[in-house]
Image (cartoon, rainbow, N blue to C red; front, side, top):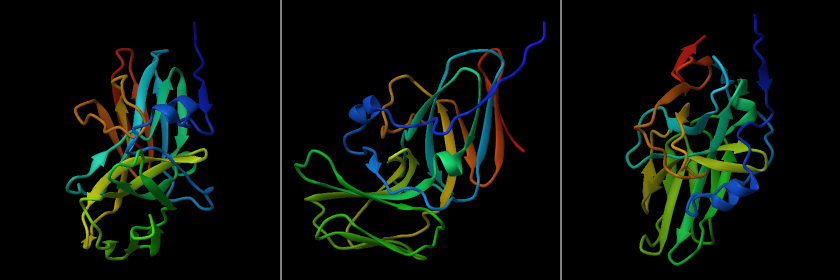
Length: 230
């Protein structure tokens, strides 16, 4: 008997649900973002399976080179039962992220800015006292009271109305953070416990996809995945 493979093109496969929003990491929650007006370099993935295996995946992001203190975080979750095709640049576009958490506050104040290049110029005002600047030199962090505020910068992935942290970097007062360049979309096998914004377990099986290419991730009958760049 022959079988026909079905490819499901899902407009927003990693969309943040109400439950995920409620259960998100309280220090790295999704942030409401403006609609995308342009896309970064296309990065496309097709996932295929030998049969319905109910494969649970999470997506993160990573920089081109490791940054001291950098943390990959769960930006979305996906169950794979049939074949799935994802255009990351359209369905999970990349954003710059920044947050400040005041000592004693419940949740941080956050900002996002649509990514277009590693050297673009923009400002993100987190509160009346802390405004972060980004230019070709990197992130410029102003003086502030480190005992009162915790500040993070990094990258997020947008789905629907929200952008979720995919990679976070803690920063310190009066510093310039250079070398933060966009790198790869990453897929991890889920441990079944992660929430949006949680650090990902780097020991879990994962697949790294540098931006700007087309990939196929094929799962065999044992559930082993092989990533191929076309």
